[in-house]
Image (tube, rainbow, N blue to C red; front, side):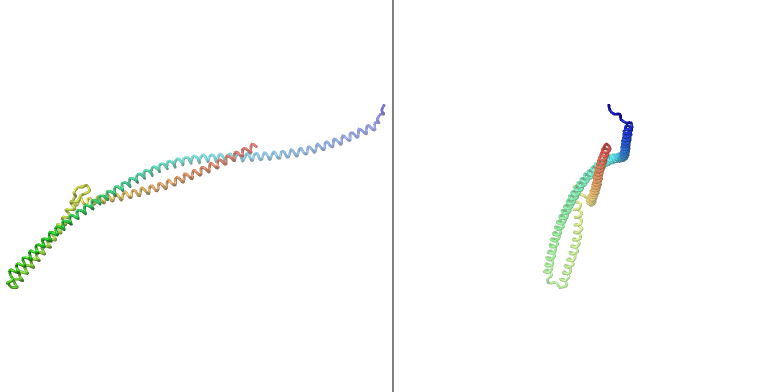
Length: 308
C-alpha cells in the first residue's frame, strides 16, 4: 500500500501548477495581444490599400468617363465634319460638272468662232484677190487703149508734119524768085500754122486725158461686183463698204474669241482652285478619321484597364 502524500506537498504542487498555469495564461495573453496588434496592423493596411484601390478605381472611372465623353464629342465632330465634307464634295462635284459643261460650251463656241474667222478671212482674201485682179485687168486694158490712141495720134502728127514739110518745099520751089519779104511772110505763116498745130495738139492731149479719165470710169463701171453683176461707182463704194464690214466682223469675231479664251482660262483656274479645296477637305477628313481611330483605341485600352 502506497504511502499517503502529505497535504503540504499537494498544496505545493497545486501552487506550482497554478503558477505555471498563470505564467502560461500570461504568455498566451501576450501572444494574443501581439496577434491582435498584428491583425489590426494588417487590417489597417488592408483598409489603406482598399481606399487606395477605390481612389485609383474612381480616378480610372473618371478618366474613362472623360475619355468616353471626348470620344463622343470627337465622334460627333467627325460625323458633322464628314456630313459637311460630303455636302462640300457634292457641291464641288456639281460645280465641277457645271464648270466642265461651261468649258465644253466655251470650247465649242471658240471652235465656232475660229471656223467663222477662217471663213471670213478666206472670203475677204478671195474677194480682195478678185477685186485686185479685176482692177489690174481694167487698168491694163485702159493703158493698152491709151497706148494705142497715143500711137495713132503720134502717126497722125508725123503725117501732118510730113505734109507741112512737103508744102513748105513746094512753096520754096514755087517762090524761089520772090523777095525775101514774101519768103519771110510765108515762113511766118508756116510758123503760125505750126503754133496752131501745137495748140491743137495740146487741146488734143487734154481731150485725150479727159477721154482717158472717162475710159477709167467706164472701166471701173465695167468691173465685176461681188455678185457677178456690173456695178456703178456707187456699187463700187458699196463693195469697199462690204470689205470694211467683213473686216469689222472679223475683228469683232477675233475679240469675241479672245474674250472666250480668257473666260475659259478663268474657269480653268477656278476649277484648279476647287480641286485644291477638294483635296484639302479629303486630307482633313483623313486626319479626323485617324484621330477618331486613336481615340477609340485609347477608349478600348481604358476599358481593358477597368476590367483588370
